[in-house]
Length: 190
Ligand code: AMP
Image 1 (cartoon, protein in one colour):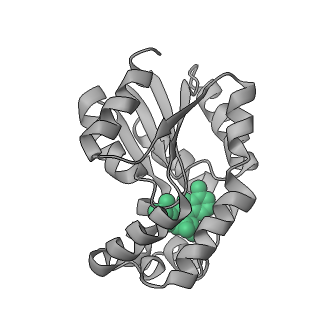
Image 2 (cartoon, rainbow, N blue to C red; image 1 turned 135 degrees about the horizontal axis):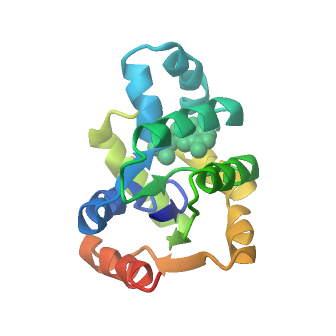
């Protein structure tokens, strides 16, 4: 298996890149944000719980998020590997993901972090908000809060994966295909 954590702040392009990479490398793309939005749309108990956090741009509690992620991985053990998009976002999630992978006799091979300046992120998300229908993309204060949450709670995971020699930074500004090429260069060395 090849398992990749696609990392970066909101608006860095993780989802867009994952869509291309999953085809190219035949991997299963798991986006915790998409899973939450699916649950919200279908008004499940999980969706109702998650919505209050997501609408504010805050993180959904670890316990809930980890349980959802684990269940999704269990459903796709036949796949050649996973692209994790938007997970992990806290150290507890990263530890849990390592344990999950180890229990499958596998591991995370790389964290690939897309680097994009904050003002570009805000502009990209405001633009996306015009068509995404996402409440958390529609309001600049919420967007800035999501970026703040990333720096306060999530960015520290770069150190977590650096310690494991699995961190790769990639310039996240350019055309979609340029960025896919940059990420592919990393994956091809794994
Ligand atoms: P995303 O689609 O990755 O931008 O995620 C949208 C929102 O879903 C985030 O702002 C969080 O509220 C929630 N969310 C997604 N992934 C996670 C996670 N790994 N941990 C906690 N909350 C998450």
